[in-house]
Structure formats: C-alpha cells, structure tokens
Length: 315
Image 1 (cartoon, helix red, strand yellow):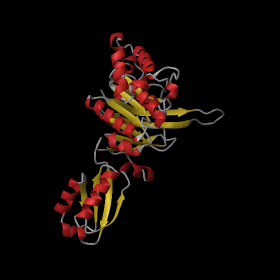
Image 2 (cartoon, one colour):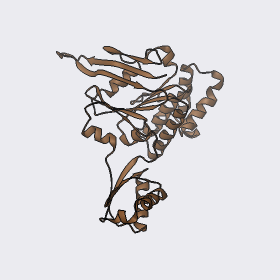
Image 3 (cartoon, rainbow, N blue to C red):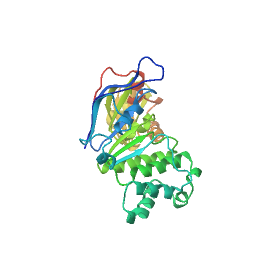
Image 4 (tube, rainbow, N blue to C red):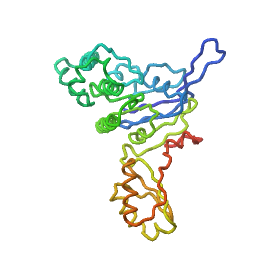
C-alpha cells in the first residue's frame, strides 16, 4: 500500500496575472508502506500544495497520484485516511469528548464502541477526564493539537497526514507525539508529515523530501526515531584523544549514552540524544581527564539542505 507520485504539476492563476504561478513541477516520488515520510522546505516551496494533492483536496494540472492503486479522493482511500490540518477549525462550543464522538459517528464507526473508543483516544493523547468535559473554546493551542491528533487517529487509519502536528505543543506534548508516531508505525501505518520543525522531523522520519520552487530537490534517508539524533563536535588539546585511545573514548561515550562517530588527534564527533546527553558526555570526558576545550553542536543534515540544496535527489 504505497503512495506513488508521477510527474505531478500544479499551477495557480492569480487575479489579473498574465501567467499562472507554478506551485509544483514534475514531482515524482514514492512513499513506502509503513514509513514516516517528511516534507520540508522554505516558505512558498509548494509543500502545502503537495499535501493538498496527496489528500485529494486539489486537482493537479498533470501527472498522477496513486494511493494503493486508487486516486487519493477515492472513497476506499478516504475510509482509511486520518488528517490533522495546520489550521484547526473546530466546533468550539462542543466539549472535547462530544467533538470526538461526533467525528466517530461521521466516520461510521460502531455506535456500540463509541464511548469506550472516544475515551481511549482522549487518554491516548493525554487529555484527562476534566479536559475532555471542558468546552473546546477553553483549550490551549497545545490541547487543540492533541484533540486534532486524537481525531486523526480514530478508526485506526492506514494513512495519516499531519500538517505541522507539533505546532504550539509543549515539550511533554512533543514527546507524546513522537511516541504515538512510533506506535502507529509499529502497526504498519504510513505517515506523511509537513513540518518546519527540523529537529522533530529528524527524530521521527524514515525519509524526508526537500521541496524548493515546486520541485523535490532531494530525498534524504534518516535513522527514523533514532534516540541519537544530534551530532556534538568536541575539541581537545592536541594529542589528548590519541593518548586516551579510541576504545577508551568509545567506552566513555557509551557510558554517557552517546556514540563515537569519528575521532582525530584533537577533535571527535559524537551522536547524542539531546542537550542532557551532550552534558553527560562532556562531564564524562572531563572526569576521565580528557582536556575538553570546546563542545558545540553540528548543523543537522536537514539544516544543510536549506543552506546548500543539492543539485539532484538522493535516497
């Protein structure tokens, strides 16, 4: 059940404009079954248009999209699709529980399981009983995102499309978001994420398409959900690392929950999970007598795409 995009193009004609504005140009790629696929790029790159075409909301000028052999707006596809939009327009007079119950009914899910499945969905996204009974107009931005995610997950869809899913979410919500994505991936669900939050994209995605000027400039393969998602560059006094030895440095890194990537006479690169992991690593090196002069994060692979986009896609 893959998503296949072939030579997709889409233009918009502006009022009084002589020429149409091309949003997508000859986009071709495949999103594999069960992977988490990210879409990134600068503002105006065509990401939202691409997502709209994938969902069947927009009709392309040319090219095709096949979702498990069907058009994206086919009812067979819609029945197994969950969607979280960037701009949430909810019935704000409803309670969270009533809102989910309403969408459970719209999805034609069984009446007999509605209450239990709605309560389970609310609990799954961290909305406690008192929040579920609260009118939506009293929800914070983060709570709205959680409710929208719960709605997208109703009925255990096979395809989930998320547009800026972690926007306005606090750190606890971001951790919850990553956990939920790992859970649905474990069930073989295909997830497509459009996001500007590159650190979160790197942590959860298997592959990422970099879109610029309506074209896919690159498709990067990542270590999906990797716990070691950042690279820390550590500089020491000349020869200090060689004297300590690679095996010793490697053991210190692993003891601090990090991994040694490469090492030279006065510099080493480590994979760390987060700022706390970086702090533990530096503390372990200093405690072992390694004279650390400087420790700084390295630019992520996705950040480099924005600075120097490659000439051709790679997978």
